[in-house]
Image (cartoon, rainbow, N blue to C red; front, side):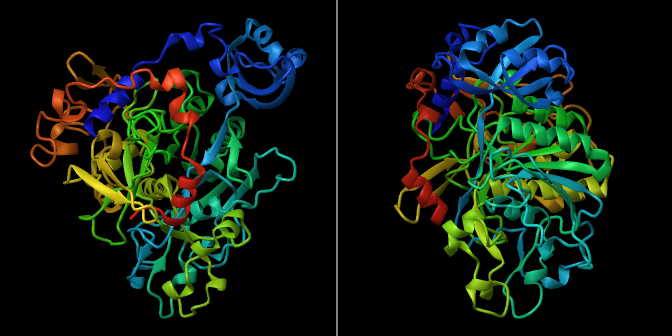
Length: 569
């Protein structure tokens, strides 16, 4: 396994400049297109043009959206006009308006450790519940009549704002046609009212059960969207920040990394939200089983989880217990380091395997995987599954809202916390794994996957909400995720710390905090020659960029269906 991690970092460092040789202002994926082909792009300008000035660009194509938060516009242009558009003196870069998707698989019953509690008397007595905090959910929308999203008195909805950014025909609604956004919202802020009372087995609620929800719909009925939709929603969240006290943003979606963050429109928008004071939480992705490049899933963290200006969350398997001692990483959780920029990701992991949350019974997911409806007998008196209001899903999409809910509680406790401080506290208080490896078995195929609990698989460790709330730390400095520098001659990797960084020896990535001096890796072992990377092995050095192997042959449909129905054991 260690040689695969070393191979991954070698591949990540082998980015070839030839992809950008034709025109440095145009992304490589926009070259060699058919003449006259319509192509959706995001054009970044040196100076933000006024809406009136945009008429100047009508000769190149159709303007679709004004993305001023990143000095850009979404346009549809003819392929043979790209070169001329790039020569405009005010055009800085042209990127594809790429497709994004929800980062989810459906699964069976594993109740997690925060959304399913068996002590109902705790309801209403929590010291923090998210009251007054706004969480923006950029997803497939919300089912607005969910009584579990009412206030504690059951008299008013906590969905305080809804807006649609999906421009596809017959998709212009704020309702959740796919079923993903409703489930994510429940993990963040369901009050558990439909599972509270009666001869239930579990109380199913969100992390912050009185938080206010801002639903910005960016995914259509198939769970798909575009960069420009997401960026428009991020821009709106920044604009609405003061009005709704938006302190947290959840992005349970992603797409493959196509270049450095500095040229990626979605990364740039996330950075703007972070710097505006919003804690941005992003799903790492579900490509941890992807071995098409011989890397055992390393180097598969998706955009915008590759941004150093966010909290990137991987998916943990609780093995259906509330004990932490048997927790393990899911086989499908995407791993770092990130491609191109070599950022150490994920930042943290949280429960994401077979999580119970709200169901939209009229959604595509429910219709496709109706067997994932949670039997009422799990949480109430009835045994009639047809009346089920909860649903089971898996993926880093479910792990991210666990962290978003935790962040909402933290800023409720201390409204002065900055995004950097929230990130640092969450990572510093994360539970450290005591075992070096773990195994997960596909219940359908019987195939077993072995994962190493290293920096690029579990980040700083597992989310611990209570520890984060109990922390008295007020860290100062930048919490940008550090980059990794790898010396292929010595086999030694080291962290490249940003200026004014929080990640000193005794903070997060230091030996005495993250890994412990004698628990897993030892004081000097982690970044030693043989600890993670191994001393040899360079197979696949150019695999990704010579054949587009990793993302060109993503998870096969048969395996995706298997994960959708079964998750991990």
